[in-house]
Length: 285
Image 1 (tube, rainbow, N blue to C red):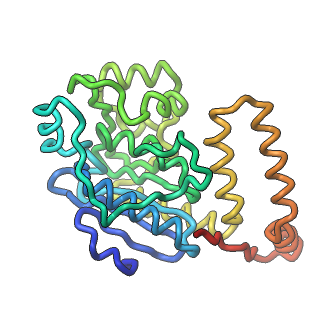
Image 2 (image 1 turned 45 degrees about the vertical axis):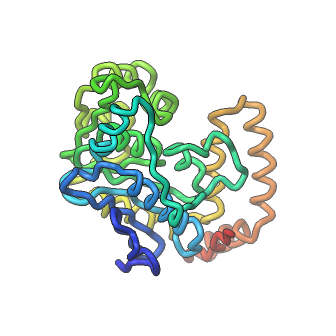
């Protein structure tokens, strides 16, 4: 892998590109990659680079060391407890607004902006995943999970409620009863249960989740049109908020657009000629 130009300025993440895949590694292993305002700003900035780099098909987010992310840094939680309000520091040099070209208000907060990204984002959960880290994984498009991974919501024991949009997204992944169980009890969920209830998409051998997530993105980069991948992600998350009739009408309009694109001709031709397709790259501003 190689660091992308300019990413050396990051202090709390590592951002690397290998072929069509970018990898964000939260890099505070001594703190189980607990999130500071700086970490969150750097992740958002790196995702903006992924969005604007046409060679990149998708991004993997993972953690350094033995954990994915233990939630918000305890120092930040202590500051919030003393102040009795949310505390957030500004990092203007990392200002970025990745994705969400339609300016959809549903995709402006963090981590809900993950849903507005135009390219896939996969969480490679390599260990402990708690609090805001759990919310980050929840709002990724897929979750590849090490066998040793453990999940915990951790909101109730801190006297908090389901934060960061988790109350909206989690039931859509695992159902309302399972979501309430995980939120109310704040018990640990292992990888096997996460897979059984539909939270995890893959269970991987220890240390393999990021590798398998990258391999998945490389595979779809070879077989699927990047524009099709982008539109299908948009369809899924927009249509969760729409009536079926409205979703069908929008899908029919976008289907007509896809038939008129060169990618459709290339997809048919490559199938007939039994060769790999050569699809268009996404050109973003």
